[in-house]
Image 1 (cartoon, one colour):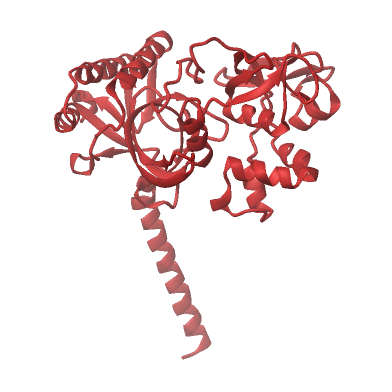
Image 2 (cartoon, helix red, strand yellow):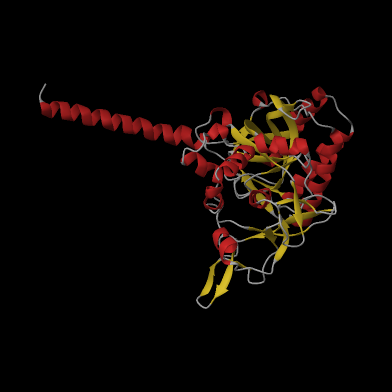
Length: 402
């Protein structure tokens, strides 16, 4: 066989493979990476709920109030190509709530859902089979602190400074955060600049014992501070500095300080205690900085404004997934013994409400479950890193089924 003939055969094979790849992309890949997938009835999971219905009703009422207050006349376009008025999502939720008030059996509830609701599933992480998502947890931490800088309370959290500016971008669909300088609008100070240059001195809200406590409070977005007189006050997210979130867990993995499986909040805390000389560099890897205000006794509120319900409220990426529908989460939760140790992981299946968002929660493959406060909440949130599936339910209507 001549070299010219070999080259021609190779070129034809290459062209054939390229054509196959193009056809696969056109007919298959677009379906795989949809943000939401319509689920046929034979694909629907068992909609059994492992929590009490009272917590559902409480979270549902909060969600209805949020939708009615903020969604009048608006539509959501994140259900594939179908657009649902917010009023329809409210009606869906009210109908579902009325059924829950009847205390249905799992079989009765399953029948009610498949007969009356359209089911969607979040697309999950690219490259993961079965539209699997990464499910993590967050909670409302309690840290020791003081109103004044007195040893050992040396690490401040701040209220929003006066020079922090928010303005709409061109088009008015996004908000940017920064400060005004002689040269116009500029990015706000980074975590490193705030913590080393004293650029917002005077806006200290309270002082904590540990720098990682302060950092973790930023990550969680809200928490409680216990003062020396044993009084407790809540602090809530007020604003950020507008800069991107960089994961210090990913940094430690990239630097081969620990494996991806080993990365948990306790593991990071332990590493920083063992390597104090690296603490500032690692924490400053994340330029994003959070400002706080004092909160009320109702509990933390999500980005939606709704009061979060432990075990029912989730954080999602609102630009990728719908925040107006009822959700159903299927994943795993820890089993804890009397010594406070995780001994196993068991299934978690329950209805949830997308009431929050987070700088680390991006795309269709991430969901963060709010655990509340207390020892179990802290343990679950700090160790939860499980695969899971997330579904959304919307009441059927004739024009949405065509």
